[in-house]
Image (tube, rainbow, N blue to C red; front, side):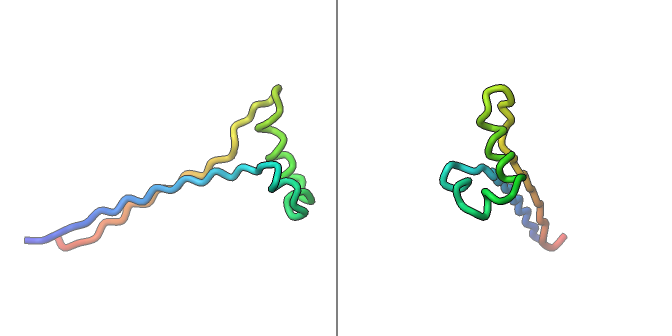
Length: 63
């Protein structure tokens, strides 16, 4: 007799800036954020926003 457990944790973050964000001084002063705001909105580029995907699998129990 024994037991085991599997926990699968999936996480996705979408880091997208909107008009309110880009007007804040912290974002406006860094070129990285300005580029990240501009590219997804420009008709000739149409880049997709940055996504971060994370998955972890935890297994526990007695075997």
